[in-house]
Every structure is written in structure tokens, then in C-alpha cells.
Image (cartoon, rainbow, N blue to C red; front, top):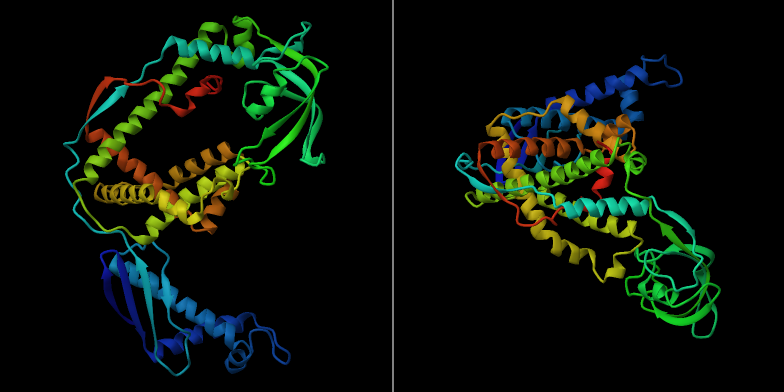
Length: 449
């Protein structure tokens, strides 16, 4: 076997392979020998079927398998000699082996770009110091009290307000007075002011008293989860069956124990503060790391493998559409298209791909590695988080060629930590305390401490 390498771009390679007739003959012979071991045919003992009979009977699949085996062997040999690691699928351009003829084919794939990594020991960056406002802790206490409040029947005759829980019967009708299927319920319990129903619908309920019936028109939003109702106006009939109020428990040691197994209120307070601090510490650290990476990326230029960019772009689009589906919405209901999403996420995907290329280059230069134990730890964490079986989760990634992306992600994380450790990080006062998305419910984290 002989081959030639063509650099069609800084990140694209084409390898043209020439296979002599003798090697073709040997590859076919090896494939036939494998078939001879297991083939069972009338008139012959197992393992004793002549090669000519085997070739005649199984020619189609035998030649296909022989071609695949030979090409795969060549790929391993060539990549090892050239010390290349494709970042894309290797596209095979060729036919199948033919007896008595030489064989030629081409391999097309992408690799990581080669470039000189800039000095990353002189980067200076500001990192905010995390702070916690006592008002935030008190707000968490109030949420916990609300979550653990007792819901009891309201004796007073009054209109419902936010924070109350109502029990209602409701139904919707079209302009002809026909009941709309799927928009009705009896004894439906609904908390007010928590965004679980349309604001217009809640506003109707808030004007009523126990036992009262009302009919009003409401208009569903354009992005309503039921496309048959999106943007339409209907006649809504509502009966307020009963009104319930929440009786908030006292903030005391007993509540702390029930809320998360804390010994007292002070321990719960410390856990909430720690949750805020941990979240913000990680956020500010991540922001500082991004500034470091952005600074270094401005010092270097390189070509991006299209397959790497496409991978990030595809993941961003898939994540967006999946989140829509989890909320009961379709992409069409947002007025967007897949092509529009691709254009919208292109800049973000490009930034992600550039970051990955750079960090993997740093990892290579610093000889960083990811061990099998670290890979397993990642999958065990994912399994615990998603409720999946560790063995099946890892097998799924292996069977679907997802192991390398996970490996590269962990390797990139190591490289980022190294860059951070070598940078000059200046601690500065925090500018804002409302930047952590999951600060809205730190009591969940606190209960895990």
C-alpha cells in the first residue's frame, strides 16, 4: 500500500491510497478464510468448504467486508504514521475490491489547525468577590415558609388575591357557543400569582366571591402551547367553588429541621449564605476565565474545522428546540425556523469552537491528559444527575461516537484551569448581586449540604 497526502486547506486533508493486486488478493483470502471456519453447507463438513465455493456463495457480503477491513487497517496505519487525529468523520471515496485488479481510494477528513500558542503567563484579569445581602437570605426564608404553608379554607367572604389558592370549575366556548374540547375542568385547584395560568384568566377569578359564576372573553397568546387556541379569543365561564388561604409557619428551629434537616435557624441561614457564595464564586471565576480566554484568542488566528463548528451549532439548535418542547411549545409557535436558529447561534457556536481548538492546543503543549477514572467520574455524575444507569450511559456514548467530545470537554476544562492558575487575578468588589440564574432557589442547594 502506498499513499499521498494532499493539504486541501489548513484543516482539511485528502489521502489517496494505492493498493497493489497482491494485497487485494491477500485481503480477499483472509476474508474467505474467516468464512470457511463457520460456514455450513450441504455436502461439506464444517470448516471444510472449498474457498472457491465460499467465494461464489457469499461474494457480495464477503467482498464488502474485505474492503471495509482493509480500509480500516490502512486508516489505523496511516494515522499512526502521520500522527494525525481527525476531528471529523473520515469520508471514504472509493468502490470495492475486485479480484485480479489493483485498488485505489481516497480518504477525506478534517484535523485541528496548527498554530503557535501565544504566551499565556502574562494575562491580567479582574475577578469579582462574592457577596451576600441579608435581604436575599430573608427572601429565601419567606419562600421556604410559603412552600411549607398550610392551605386552609378561608372563612371570610372576599375576593381572591395573589398567594391564595382557589378551587374552580371552568369551560371555554367559541363564538357559536360550542364548548371547546380540552378547555374545561371541575374542582380545579389553582394557586394565584405564580404564573400557572394566563394573567387574564386569573384576573377574572380575582373579581369573584365564593359560589359566584362569571363569563368573560379572554385572548390566548400567540405562542400558546395549544396551536389551535394560539391567538384566538374565547368565551370563558368560571365558577369559584371555594377559596383557600395559606397559613405561614413561624420561622423557628422546628421549621429549619423540617425544611432541610438543619439543627436550628442559624444553621439554615449559614447554609443559604454558603449556597449563594458558592454559586457566585463559581460564576465570577467562570467570568474571569472567559476574559482570560478572550484575551488570548485575540492574540492568535487559525482556521476552524467545519465539522467542529457544525457540531457546536447543531447542539445549540437542539438544546433550544428541546427546551421549547419541554415547555409545551413548538418552534413554529415562536415564529422562528431552523435556518433562522442556525444564523442566530452561528456567532456563539464559532466562539465555542475557537475556544475548544485553543484549549486543546494548550492541553497538547502542556501534555495534559484525561484518565479513564476521570471519564468514569464524569459519567457517574451525569448518571446520578439524570437518574440513568452508569454502565448504559457510558455504553451509549461509546456506541454513538460521543466519547471523544466528552474527553475533549474534560481536557479543555483542565487547560482552562491551567490558564487561570498562570494568570494574574485581581480580586475586586462585586458590581451586581443578581447575576446568578440559580440564586432564585438556593434553599434547594442548602438542603443538600
